[in-house]
Image (cartoon, rainbow, N blue to C red; front, side, top):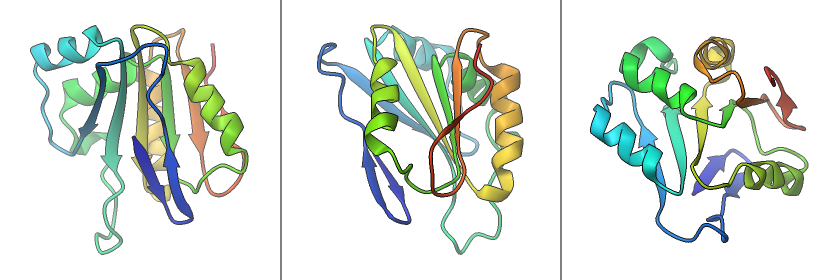
Amino acid sequence: MLISTPSGVFQLVWPPALGRPVRTATIFPHTRWNRHTRRTIEAAPFAYLMVEADPPPSVPTGPGPVDFHDVTIKWAARAASLNVVWSGDLPDDQDGFRAEFERHAHAGAIVTIFLVRLEQHDTWMDHVLKWRRPNSEVFTIRGIGEPRVGGQS
């Protein structure tokens, strides 16, 4: 899975120990995933989910959680062992950050990445902190620099 930022591309590799099939999926505004789709993703050995809330610069404002299908967007936060709210650039320590992703690459895990506009960052953090599982981790990336961990249990 590739994540594009203004300064480059961050690549997440397939967890080698898990083999295939590793699922990747993107959730767009108003995308509705039925129960069968959600359960299929949960049954995968590992899944990366991308919530696409960072539209092209020509769009004046990015969508918030209310612009997504309610059940689907709540599930995306609740299903994950790691939620990342990403409104910034690549972290300075890309190897350390990648290692944190890989730490969550175990059987049955889901990592959800919320790509959001900076002006919507706090709204998305509130959503993730409200709907995540109590034992999940939350990272937030704002601007260039180290990822900050928030809401960790």
